[in-house]
Each structure stands twice: as structure tokens, then as C-alpha cells.
Length: 341
Image 1 (cartoon, rainbow, N blue to C red):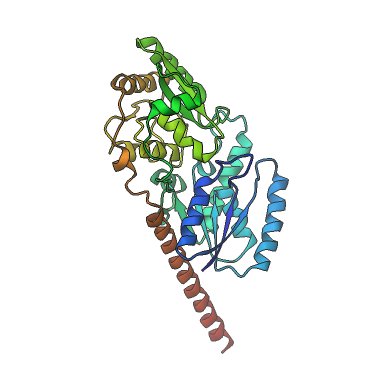
Image 2 (cartoon, one colour):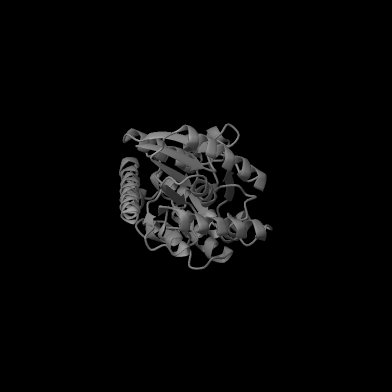
């Protein structure tokens, strides 16, 4: 089966971690026999970027005989559905459905993104979401919930003492790790800062908040394993992927109730899902985890995230979508033939 992957996020030299989970899925599907080509574009700069991407995509589609298009993110899904009549599968990841956040300062852009995603979901031959929360938000009862996988060979437990010297961190402080762009309003870095300040003022040991942003994927496990706890303060998430990566490293997590955090953390003793979405609740969770100061057994929270298993589920969506499309085309041909008779 020949599949064209269309995505608005893909790793680059400047942004090595962007869309790394899409790249992993493409590689896993290729190992199952999918003949894959990737059309990646960056549309954040302006509407003109999307217009150029649309016409370029039309040219790519005209030159290749693809069986199916798989688009990642709603904006890419809309482009793919408008550019071709091929069966199109769209995977939604989070901000494409929820928008850019209440404090983004770009309400029009956020509304356009949400509208584009809902239109993409309507036009798509099949919809995949990475968490049940996204399925509820899209109101697509027939959407397939298939989370993104993590690299279990890369994300694994390591000794934090060896890594802290490499990163230049003190071995005498308890480290709270924040993964993401502090300037991204969805991540709410200021909420993490407030929570850590409250926690530090209530305990007798030093606490430091460290940031891992735009780091090469191979170095992210070093940051995670060097930390004592990962904090997630996002306004919304599809996954979140960093939670799963932390569990793969047996690093405890304190998270607000976003994405599938409730489902995954419920299976892992030593992690905290906060009762409220505020700095005080998060600080209480941090104090609880940092006081115990131990690793967790994160394997139960990520048992379903095997590369090949998830890729096989996506492949099943491809096959059912292609079969449904073929049946629909046959019905149309029969109906056209009947009318001519």
C-alpha cells in the first residue's frame, strides 16, 4: 500500500523534536510493509504558507499513485482532504482540536485552527485521535483512539547521579523538570513556576525547576532521568507524550488532569494527578513526591505503547478505510450503469 503522509510538524535541524512521534509512526508502518512518502510543511508563519503548501501538495499527488493519504494534525488534514479525492485518514493531536489556549493572545488564529480541524474531521474518510478526550471534544463517535508510541530503547531508566554532572545540575537539590516551550501559553510555565515556589517555601530541602526545551530527542531521556519529578501544567494536551516518556524512565509525574493522564497515572503508584488545576494543588503533589524521593514502576502506565502494536492498529484503519472506499466506488459504478440502462 502506498501512503502519502502529510504533516505540519516534522523534525528538522532547527527543531529536532517537532513531530518526532509522527516520524516514529511512519517508520513503524514502513516496517510493516507500507510504502511511505512524507510531505511536511510549516504553516505557522502565515496563511500564505498554507496556500503554497496546498498547491505543492497538489503537484506531489499528481506525480504519485497513492492508495491513501494519512494527515497528522487538523490543519494538514484539511489541506489533504481539499487537495485530493483519495481516501484520507486524519490523526488529531491536541492543540489542533482545542486551539492555542486561553492566554495565547491570538483568539482569531485559535478559532480558525479549531474550525479547520472540525472541517477536516468531517471531510476525512477516517479519524484517529490520540486520547479519548479528543474524541469527546470532536464529537466523533466513530473515531479510532490510537495513542502515539514512545521509543522504549531510548527512554529507559538511568542513574541520575551520572547524568547531573553531565548537565551541570547540583546533586544536592531536588529537580522538578518542565518539558516544553516556556513561551507556549498552552504549557502554562508560569503555573509550574508558582507551584515550585510554593513547594520550595514549605520544605527544608532545596528544589530547582529545570526546563527541557527544543532539545535533540536523544538527550531528552538524560533530562528526565536526571530529574526527581516531571511536572505537567498544560491547559490541554492530546497525550501528553512527555508523561509516557517519564514513565518509561520510571520518573514520577505530577500532572493536571489533561489528555489521558488520569488513565495512565491511575496505574502507577507514586505519581500524582492533582485535584485542582491550580498552583496550590500542584505544589502539594510536588511536595508529596519529592518528600518520598523515589522512582516509580512506570511500566503499567505504558504497557499499550508498543511501536508495532500501535502501527498494526493504524494499518487496520487504512485497510478498512480503503475497503469502504472501494465498496462506495463500486456502488456508484453500479448506480451509474443502472441509470444508463
